[in-house]
Length: 365
Image (cartoon, rainbow, N blue to C red; front, top):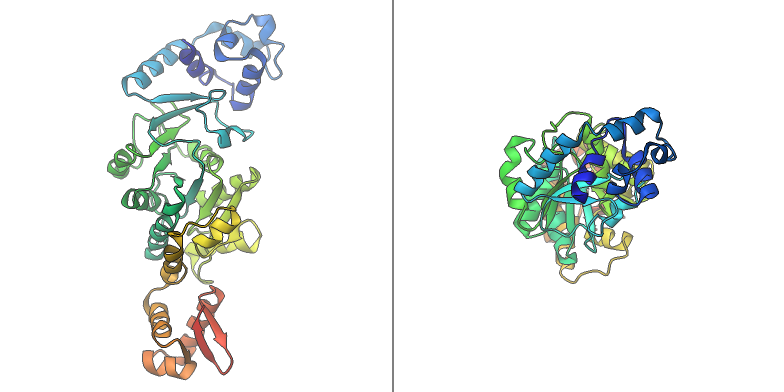
């Protein structure tokens, strides 16, 4: 019966998460709210005569009963705000949902939880970096959270499935559907070791206004939010801003200075909204995690080839083979025009991938 009232609390018209939490604090639990008199309800800050009458009318109870039947039929867990199973990190956030719907096996109170977010228009660089990032974090036994959206989000979930890392997708709709529909198979694969999480009841469509709400859960669940690849506009920067408001760590991988898909990451770093990270060792240091021995090799792989394609990759491979090289040797060996080679080397130096030595010589960092 208490689950029915917990669901009902989230369906009261005009009552949001802040007022719901005031009601819980005042009456102790959801049944206590619905057993209260009008006089008692009016003593709660934010509850006026109209809202009190709405609660007493209980016109939403049938909808709550339907939802309870739905979650029981599909074995969906309801995590109420004051229950032990509710994610503790999220509970600390001032606008945390009162009720979550969860289907899956991952522990939402795992010791180490990371959110990975980024652009919907992920490049090959972003997808490869995400895969290597997840592989590098595996030894830390992390839980990875993302939003099941196109681009970096789904790349993170796929990487976790491939690497055997538990991952939870936070969605902006009810659990009676998957959006985008193309990610259904991935979502189903996540259920055995990870899960799907939402604050929205069934029949809730993936409307645009739901996704900023979804983003606050992605940020609130984790110890840190890592932005892999992001433009200046989009959900990834919103998630990063929310994480900052929660006093959670935000980290971003730098991108090329002229790459629009990394402009958001560069902006976060430049404006001191995110720590610059180039590998797993940086993340371990910032979160004060004891480095896992298995991470050392993964980080070595992650911090060099992650941003390298085409001519930059050729430069890195040449320097790896010969240790160091002069500008003229590189130009002759790789047949790259002088002006272009100058820009490529400058970009790689700014990304902390190479070191410029005296005499116009270069080596890998």
